[in-house]
Length: 136
Image (cartoon, rainbow, N blue to C red; front, side, top):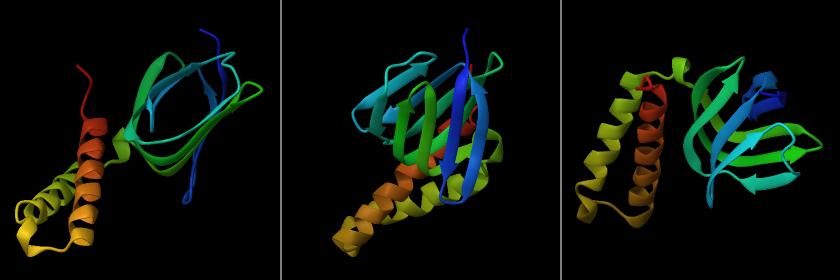
């Protein structure tokens, strides 16, 4: 499989800069797969598990927000947050899930903004846990 240059960048810095054979990432309108010679493209990112094939091996990461672009064969994933599966603290993600669920289980005790923030924390916690799971 042909390779292309991929950069994964977050506000905290560079997460990856090298050759990749494929990228599968969640956009706001659904999943998109990118391989070598992909047409020029730009899309806003949603929240999901990103799959990157590097040297024939798939790596997974939790990817939240930002944008993905393909320009002249170069691919840039500019994410609000991106964590490789092996860097995810699963216990912390489970604690975040439990905290968010505790708020969402009692909506009458919280204002709309608190509930909306809890929903976002819950989605991020579930994505982080999903990315950290070993593929079957």
